[in-house]
Image (cartoon, rainbow, N blue to C red; front, side, top):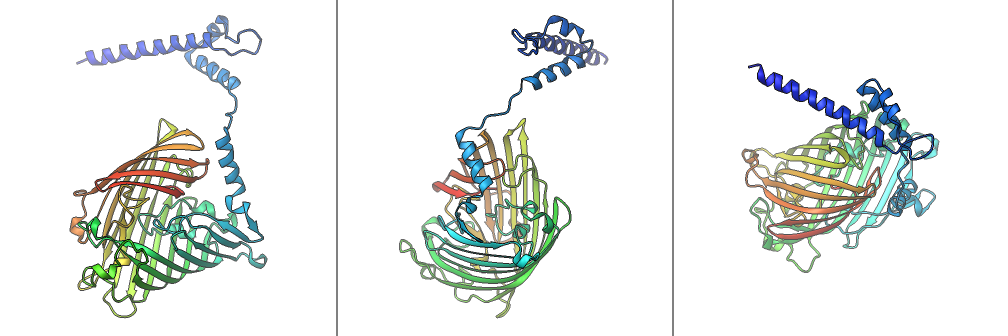
Length: 452
């Protein structure tokens, strides 16, 4: 019974001796010196070190003397300059800025204008407004007025496509405890895809519809500490659904009915309330290498024209980032689920159901390919930084939609995999290109911001 212990002890002693000798040889051969010639430590210097610990201290000291700052290449300098200057600040007039990005996952490129006054009249109140119009005719107009609205909306888990790239650090230092503001928003999306409800919807049933809505919310919350925040919001939502403008496909009203697409005929106004908790311990929210986050949001939708479309929603978003030996190699993991509880004889409108597919979820499928009352999504990315400005990615996505909670499991998942490239700075992902493959073909995406 003692032999394994004896053998282990002997191996440990031999390993320790070999490390000592190897370290000694390295110290003799290292090109480090203050006094001239070839920079090698003399044998006398090595012998003067009485213990292995002194040898390694000596080695670390010599490496420090040799170290030189990393030189940035032209690409890194360009992205860092854009980050320091802020792309919006490059083209501005007083409190007005040009903005660039995407309105939604299917909108295409959407330039716009933003107005931002963080100290209205010298007070702690701020006003922010923006307008954006995409190359595909998507429109977004919003206005926020109050205190601390810089990044508060990121407290709320909205959908599987939510990047949650911002957090408490986006607030001005003096506003990082409390936020309260009015949020007014109008959207018009003229070519939203609809394939049907449920996991067995068919690619050949692709239709499109116009989604138009206006929301009027009051948002409030509190940042408890550096990594924990809570929030709540309440307001009204008005929705209108019309025939889509994409002439390549039939309108949703031509192929589907109220029974197969709940809410297609009648779109009531909603009173909605949400509460959220947000735990964020990522090392750099816009470009994380370590840490993670947890977000939970409960929402209630009340049908103001009856009770047909009342429901509760529970949304969970969990992300973890693991450095594999160094921060240049990162394993990024994500779990997201959204569960709707409509109760007996009530339904969730198809235009409010969570969706899978597109640039942020199942990247091998078209945008909004699957939708239902419940959703489960998993994603993993292996990220390798070739340089601080350039990152290569391998990714794998899986997920499904389902109508009954009893189907909440990891069976019969839709899957996609692919590769990607990220252009970024140390603090943020500026632009990405992803190519995803699935049983329905190949999809390529050009997007601003991170995937998750």
